[in-house]
Length: 353
Image (cartoon, rainbow, N blue to C red; front, side, top):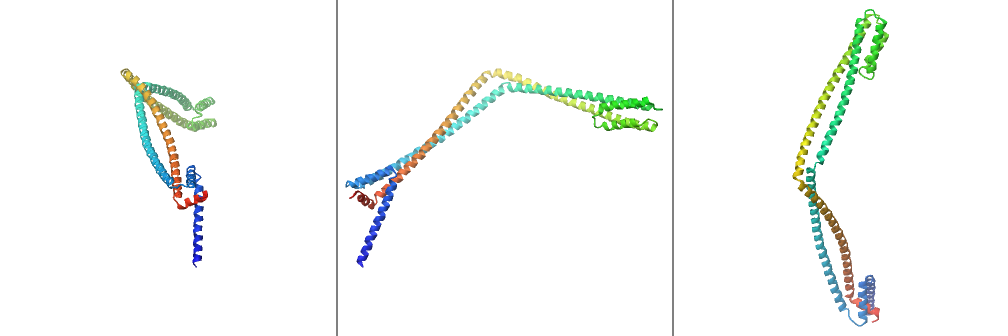
């Protein structure tokens, strides 16, 4: 019974040692991926192989871990200060750029208000509008005169036809032809006039069909001619009213433009006196605006350079922190391995001690 228990215990111890040996080999293989950790393991093998102990190596690695962590804290601290400095610089640059923008705007506003460029543009536009509207009014008036002449001619032809018809007692072929001729002249003048075309066409057809054999036909023509004359007179009155309204509107528009022109002229006189009074200030402002534009360009370049530098420093900081964390983690793994009692036995067995 005791022999059986002793055999089980021996096999258990051997199993533990084999597992520990296997674990140590796995850890060693992982550590040797790092040059630093590989050096620690190699040093430990040399130390043990020469009969030394691992105590001093363990202490040195512990101190190294502390040193790496302190240096990492310093890196964090320096980067934090650099971040604060960067934020202050960016705020300052942006504020100074805004100040330059404001100075440039105010300076250019003063220059624009002092110079006559805008006033000259206003005067030229005022004269251009006046000339354009004068030409349009002239065309409208010429069209009015042409319309009036046509309508008066048509009224004259109608009156002549009515006069002929009023004298008809025994209609003759000559009188009939003269009435038709007058209607033809009226149709030629108003063939495109939508309101007159139907009644003129009806008159022509009636004058062609009738032979004026009786007074009934004559009376019918007289009635239609009178209706046509009323339409002509109404159109004449409307054309005259429209022309009068257009002329009144044009006169008011001309008066408005002339008033604006006079105001622009007065403004030119005022500006000329301001230019004389502010000649020195105007010159100084032009120079100042140019300087502030240069300042703004310099500040914008400095801001861009600061942002670029900070981005590079941030990248370096992130890579450095990652490297430190990696070395600290590896050192801690190596330290953990060195402080295991089985490791010393494992290394001794590897070097034949």
